[in-house]
Length: 579
Image (cartoon, rainbow, N blue to C red; front, side):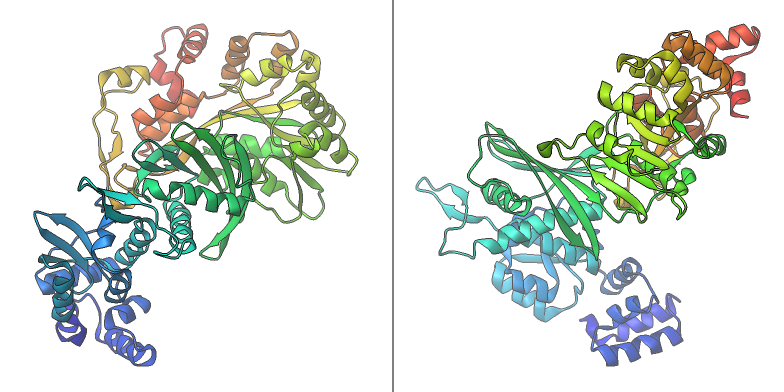
């Protein structure tokens, strides 16, 4: 047993993992707090928990298992009582061929091992695990794996929901819901999907824009989990045959999170999607979002204008709101009146009057915008221009001394002009009011912990006009990135500045391609070019850029190159534009 500390202390000192002074400080903390030595060392930051676990594994001559790497079956929670697992910090990780692999923080604890053998009545193979992930695994497994098992008349083992006399009804359901939400926050998920089918309840988290499957409760718990979520969102518990929408708030780690809930009936049960919004999230600056210094400088110049409209375009989930908040954060001061109209309000900002759209009482973007204009605003953020009425009021506000920020759904920056025309705005109005349009996408960022050199197929080299000797990187996958090779996201941008030439093209009702050519001639760099730069910098992969960004605009660059410098290669032109 390691808790006598002798072997652990000697090993850590001999390997120079800790110093004698750190050991003395840890011993003092042990006496004061009555905690184990390992916990004291971690508390005073003498050593991190993973390094300590690896040192213990060496001392015990026991394999080290990272529980975050493996897909642990939560049904193994039925093998050991919850109280025993929590108090001894042990969990049966695998059960293969009658041998149970037992994850523990102390493989030399013979007393604990004997008790486990008595409970399981089988052979035990103990492995060393890091304490914190193991404790988290135990909490998740026992909150989500509490379905009862019984033998049917034909001898098959089946699962059933607990009856009133078997276990407390609210306990495991509440724990399961809390565990799902907390796990989603830890993973940085933006959405949680609860998808039932005929035999399984699928739990999936959207992390960095992609859905990832997670272990979760059994299908028998699904109806009660939905009922619990409906209670939290104040939805109709008696209605399961029509869609419902609601919202609720919960706290985790001291931070509040707003959740927007959508329930839709399917043939296999009610499908639930939860959108997680961190109301206290930090607003990123231009550089953190991935903007180049040129684009950040242009955007700062646009944001200093006293009036006009600035638009951000892109599909849902492309970071448009984040960009608008970043601009708004720079403009937020005591001598300006900033008002936003949003659906939903995603981040609370001090000194900013934020209005939530409510369609149930006919509080639409247009109606709210009319009222806001009587509030003496300097800056107005309109969450989205969806209809002709909202577009007309927003353009009028931009022409009458207000700086307006908003979004539209188009594929590129130049397409926003055609969209405004579709919404009934005359070319001369758009030309007079428009300051600029930012189009953007989000791509996954290569995980810095497992980044390595990568090979790219010839088709993608050609598609992005990369030179074959260019060095590119990818993530090989590790526990830090959940073995995806990516961690976090970064933006790809193109900024159309409403220069004199662009305004003239808008007034003569030029096509989107012609506006694009005019903007490129004025110095605009297209989104795929920004993507190529980020591939060269090792920030993202070729596959991510190809998957996310259209390269149809290559022809526009080629036509501009031909008109300007007939004998110049495309790669050199891209380099000149970057410079």
